[in-house]
Length: 213
Image (tube, rainbow, N blue to C red; front, side):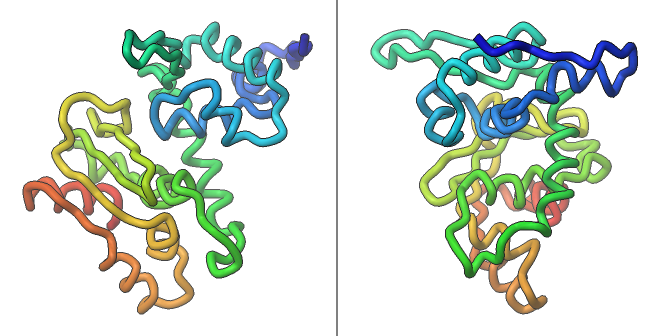
């Protein structure tokens, strides 16, 4: 059984690290930003994590009030883990800051494939502007290379999905990253033109403004 460590300091940064500072914890939360995930999904996306360590980290995140576990009824009959509303409120700004820091340190897109989750982070989590989204309240669906992401914007922040999406976006992960990091303005604009938006024109415009798309 893994031993949980803490910094034994009555400091807000130390207390935060007591919950989020363990190895793999932020990457588990990164996966859950993409939507509800089964245990097997998490294990597949986190190669190298021991099975017992993944179970322990999920338990810790549930105890910290950031992640919920739900057993879906038949015929689905599976257990999923979800970032709850407290998780969206407290964890998203941290993940956004880490992603901002690491985005320009990615390997060049031409050197290998880009995962759908990386495309989602580059396209929607990193550039989200709460000031531009202050009056926005809507749900969205993003299809990236066959993987679906669903989320909402409410009260100027990102939140878990609720209700039918007002806009559906279809894109490749490579285009979402290139739209941010393309080597030239021409490449960035070309990638942006390949991203497809479906929905009411005003809702599409509001989304594109909030996410600088």
